[in-house]
Length: 420
Ligand SMILES: Cc1cc2nc3c(=O)[nH]c(=O)nc-3n(C[C@H](O)[C@H](O)[C@H](O)COP(=O)(O)OP(=O)(O)OC[C@H]3O[C@@H](n4cnc5c(N)ncnc54)[C@H](O)[C@@H]3O)c2cc1C
Image (tube, rainbow, N blue to C red; front, side):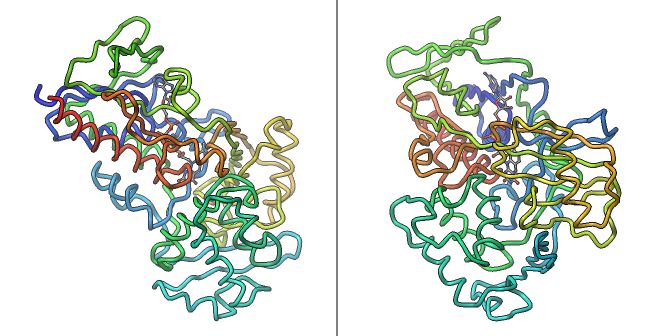
């Protein structure tokens, strides 16, 4: 086939978006995935303990996530993310009992900070200007070196937002990544900051439509197909070794590794990759949320950071949750439910629950780790990388993963044309 074959290894969002980006370019496309299913860290599954299909973790997107929205459009899933028409984030502070809504105005001039009813209680408009320092940081220093990580604005806005974006304790986290997030979202105004959720589930919204699109377009999908070794010859990858079969790469063929950083570091030992990771813990409680419960709520001074309300289920998230990874599940469920009972007024007895601990949810967004992220191109001219941990300029997010796949697809096209 003109343009050769592109072998994409890993069917998380990075691999899926690379495949979607290559459809229609005249290449043969083959997607290889270790698991029985696609989606990687962004997936839905049937949980027998609850009798419900749930996601491995709550995923929040923002309306500024243009690559994610374009991906959904390309695979025929446009409009399936749900959220309010205007940015609005409900918060509850468990220690003080206060409740408020943060309501940035639509446009880029942030007049909302001058209105007490729209900003965080206990803050003044001038406080918000201090966050602008993150936009100006040239070198990548810890956030705590640049802004004051204390006080009402930090505790009630900067901390929850940065923690959600970076999955890393903000004072130590990368100011460059924080600046990139703020530049693409809050700085553009409320219309770029509308929260969006896959209410039907990550599988039905992202993964299943992408697989159906790829299948319709002749992409070969191979599950339970684990890449075990790369064979290198001079400046090329000569073969992909899957154990039971070895695929030789022709002169016009390309391989895209859309794999976790830890796997790439084993397959290509000389490639730099992030080596530190952070956990996320999600709980799912089978209970009807009160009608007044917002779809997403930020929780201050609780065990949980965010509480998502789905039909028939309340799902809290603990971010940068490494301290809870070894905790007994029963103890953790009780502790988390105490937060929910305080927020919703629910009875203290636990409803049916499940806790999902994702030990390596994302790379740690520390300046040193950010510096280790490699670009899509490698020293081997037919080997490309994709994944949320590659040098996307963004933290490990759906948006970053999809952009990395788009970039790898673009390079596969351009480089393949040059070689073919
Ligand atoms: C609990 C949780 C909550 C999150 N919350 C958010 C959020 O709110 N907002 C947001 O934007 N992002 C969030 N993220 C991050 C987001 O899920 C990831 O950034 C994104 O899914 C990463 O996609 P990826 O394709 O880069 O990697 P992965 O999803 O890790 O995909 C890699 C794929 O490679 C496969 N694989 C591994 N080894 C091999 C092998 N040897 N051969 C073949 N295949 C192999 C894996 O099975 C997997 O399918 C969250 C992540 C987690 C875990």
